[in-house]
Image (cartoon, rainbow, N blue to C red; front, side, top):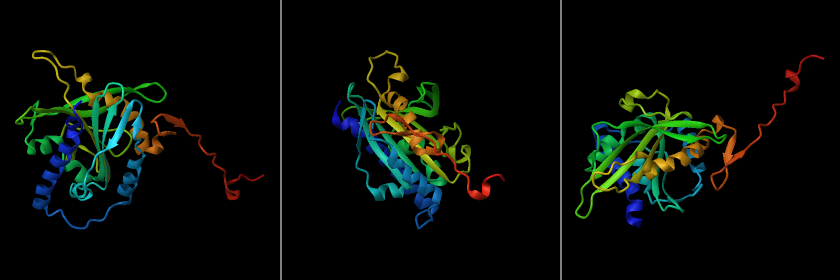
Length: 261
């Protein structure tokens, strides 16, 4: 795959999100010091637990300017492109966390359209990504997804984007405006999984499952969710992204809690 195309999704994501953030910030007079809640700080500290290698997918951090992400209201983030060492397919991850207002304001429908993209459908479609958890049980994660296209002087850019939010282990993808469709929890993660849309012949039907972003989601989500919400499971992740069982420490009662002899 062309190296430029492999890294293109993340760059476009940053430009689109931040461009709209600056405009909206001017409208709402958002800019200025605002206190960061302890929960947002805790969420931010967990993002670094996302491994750089997940199965056959090897990640490389993309250069994202700190000031740029702060303009978008992100308190913590990773911007990373993962490449499958066997198939050479690539998928980009943009994972950010912050307060509810900043995390629900910027969505691909707004941001990418503002950056000159057209969306393939009138509205984003719900999509369930099916995967196996660490015990081998089938589970699903709900996303919204859409295809975005932009014409250029050389060749059109076609992206497949999946996105969802989480304030707890169950990811959410409300079909209504997330500013009203999500709960009032103060801290949120927002996740974009992005890849170039696979090429297919004229008149040939495209299977959504072929999108690298969806293939990557199947291995990324079972690792990322426990890392971001460690209390939801009893496993941690090793450097290669595999699950490592951890034993629960026994609770030893204090002398005052012991029953009378």
